[in-house]
Length: 242
Length: 242
Image 1: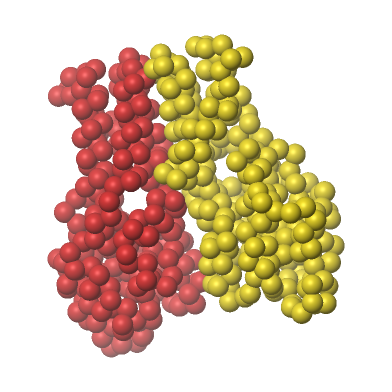
Image 2 (image 1 turned 45 degrees about the horizontal axis):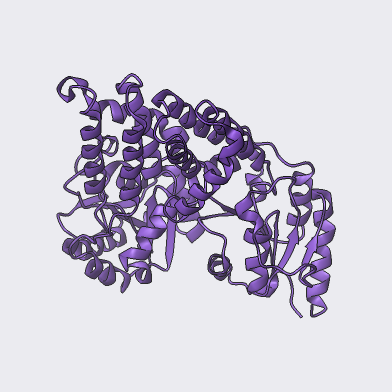
């Protein structure tokens, strides 16, 4: 029997669109690579994903790391034949992705407002500090979140640290997000609750997770409008010893 | 009359060496550029600083932004003649800079320990979240800092936000750091105190500041060993209504 005392929200693809911009960036990257090699045989984006994943432990998440990986991948894939001007275009892809407009997902402002009227909320977002801060500022949602945590990885130790700072147990915490891997699984592993709200697009890296279907402490919803009743349902379930 | 209630420490070039690695990176960058143009006429590093500064508002601080700026600057300066293999070497400069060993500045561990035995301390460091976290982990100092704040810019609003989270006034806060621009001036503007401990090297961007010499709430020291007495001196001065 626990009282829910904090609701966490993910940012990218939970509050605002993000993956669309990464996909657009990949498409532009492919166009540049297509000037040098036959895209049909190349597995260009699979190769890029490999380069990104091997660089994750040095570059971390975010657009700048993606851009550096694109540059490296482009040089590899073209055997060093790519022209500097085309690599400058890859830098421009990164710059444009860092400056994309922040578009809220439908109904998010109302949903967060409704939940924040009943429970303390915190934004827990992953990736590049500078870019995430810029997106929070442009989102117009900063007033709803008295506390914002920008973290470099969303794993159980990170959530445990954030919860310790708030002085609450995982069993008193609900995380809302689009990624089973980053938002739901680590919180559930700690003993917390999750509301999964899938986004239309998921980065291949985020699609891998080890969570059983239909976990008793995870609800799935289809839109932001369903978030307040889902959180209320978890508050009830936790109170009843769930 | 105030009691000092919190001491903040900067990371790069205050606790551990950093600028040395940036300088080494710039030297390697110059060597690559020197394959294409006469370095004597080019103002290579002045040009790089210009590119970095115009990119700061999109890339933020840190090694990944520096690396992207180096790529852009190299393409500009060589009029697009630079070979992709040489640009890959610029990416490698970035990767190496992200992975440099963390070397503590002499006496820092003892100084922080002594101060932490008397007052709460916090590490307030600027730059890339992922890289800063990696450096804190390698530094062996994480146990001394129960709270760590990694921020994207060190200006008065950022310090005001951090101090608000701790629930203390600027007049109760001392910041220790090597950069007058980032560590001392913004804190003093808010009404707080500073201990300036210069490092042998300063990035041109950090060298610009608007602080008068000999400010009454700023002490300057020459080594980490002098930090504990300097902080004690400020505690006394604040208590006496300084």
